[in-house]
Amino acid sequence: MLISISSSKNILLVPDLSKKRKRGASPSASAAFDAKIADFWIAKSSKQILAELRWEDRWCLEGTLMPVFSIKPGESLEDFLDRIGFGGESPRIPVGISREAQDFLEEMLCEK
Image (cartoon, rainbow, N blue to C red; front, side):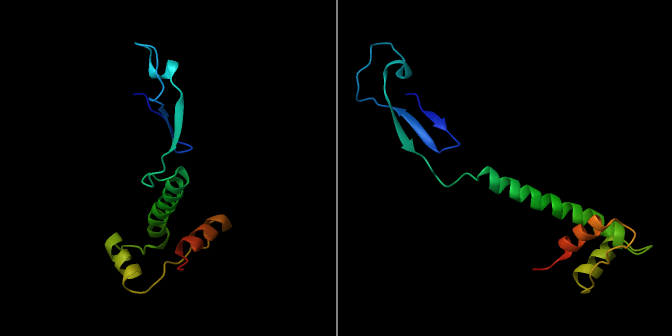
């Protein structure tokens, strides 16, 4: 049996087996197809995947940039993370970077 799947529309095209076809002919050559809705709600849409990737990329970038800009001389990364995570101290946004970079870091640090 031939089943054609249209992933963008969640439609299965299934041959109508109630109609007779010539012996040896493929189902697609002689059978009509019935359209079946196949929304199984298990696959993420591409928009969901892209939104997650963008968020993860931003989070990783923040995790990379903030220690570079905020770590004190001689301070280990572990001490920096303890200071920020448990000490209640927010990382300072440096003034020597572009306004766009400052805006980006401010948005990343915004707690909602």
